Length: 326
Image (cartoon, rainbow, N blue to C red; front, top):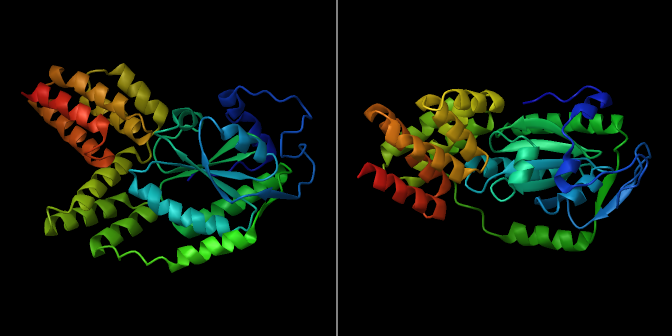
């Protein structure tokens, strides 16, 4: 988890997301729906506390961040840790009672935002305060840690005079939706090893999650969810503690080094650049000795599990791999 900057001046060196939307604000200009910097902000009527962010609409949330801190959940549909963390975020954001809003961003569909927030893996959580991004943490961390980070985020927001509160419109409609959700049948409990793996992922113990998925596969080799989970958490484990810049510079400096190219392939997949990862490894494949080819083949098969065997990108890559093998 990245510590928050201790004072408002730390925000001044952050990446300026305004370049993403080709927007330049002059000093003292009031953003739509927001407040002037330094003004005390009040209630902001909103249809919800939860939104879907895209490369096209993120300008709206930059404006909102002038008044209410915006939490950004950079996620991917294929990522089980993303789904696990989303459940935690929904609960925590609700408990903060409008002092924070949540914007979910699918990194595969919105590469500009993934790049702007420098998302090295998913899930990655950032925030925007006064139009400026703040990196928070990566991975599915425990709920209490999420709450602690958000408390620090609110302190930072207060230092920057971003103290508004979202007031959700149509409270009656929101209550009806909550009642309908409560009426839905509870999902079936996870198998024991899957549940243990999820808990391990939540606390950042990827090695324990890997061990649990392997036990599940040993008990039932046809457990496709465990196979996919193992591939996903193994990717997170390989990227844990690595620097995006170091990974890319290492791969650029050693274009024929299998380990370096596999690691940058992991980085590409984690950031949603699936075609780039496949092209990199499949282009390298014919140049390698048998051991190198087997390592690349195994990693590509892992990517198939992570992304989904029916995904068109997987179908295309599988055909290309088959032609190289035979």
